[in-house]
Length: 336
Ligand SMILES: [Zn+2]
Image 1 (cartoon, rainbow, N blue to C red):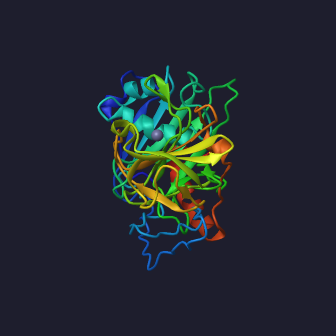
Image 2: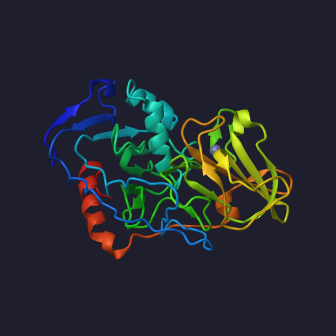
Image 3: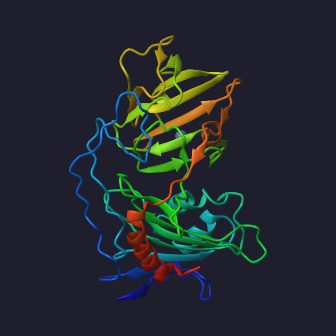
């Protein structure tokens, strides 16, 4: 239950607008469980790590709490007027609406097109935090409801760390993951997917997938192939590598901290072998891997389609904890 409810004046620009912010203070939710990991698994040399196992070879990572405490969280409810960003500019001016919008978008894009598929009259209610575990992930839970007559479907997502993962992800009420993973991943652990294929970015559309991950996280080639080129256009791409993966397709990895020794144009990299490490080089604002697939004409195509993708489900051991957390969130964002 809410110990204290305070409405933020800056967020109620016009009386009657379905826009409000509630600050939660004290004793309002489950305490975060501090998880101690005594040992992290190591990938064997001949297997490509997949996120289900989260092997960790070179980076020592702290492990995030299973879920954020709702204490100190805020609830933001908006009805869409114009775009999501325009709506948030109105709703929470002075509270980094662009940042909040970016975080909401990362919950929305697995279900709807947040740029072209959102309609006036749709509503979003979300629990978010200004900080948490040194992570940028601010959206703790989010419920979207389409306007009457829309073909969009309602959904809710909850941020929860699955057993065995280093970072939380977004899960639907039924315990299936909202985030789609590539069937063969270039990184075995990552904090968040911060960019998807086709996302509008100031006059161009994003050509790959962005995995935000700690600097130094090993990057593996999901397909393997022959190195076409390395370190071109470094002002933008940073340290980078392109591999010919056969059939006219290529794999591109940008913003690397470094490229694995022994690789050069014309050399080969085995599928699953480490080709470099996540970095923050070139035009990059935080350490991440830009992973891209180009077709035979050099045009980017969606890696989720090219490589195949899947969603995970929470294991039985997580079901009760997740249900408890989801119920606490639903008390703030409403049950379906
Ligand atoms: Zn990118």
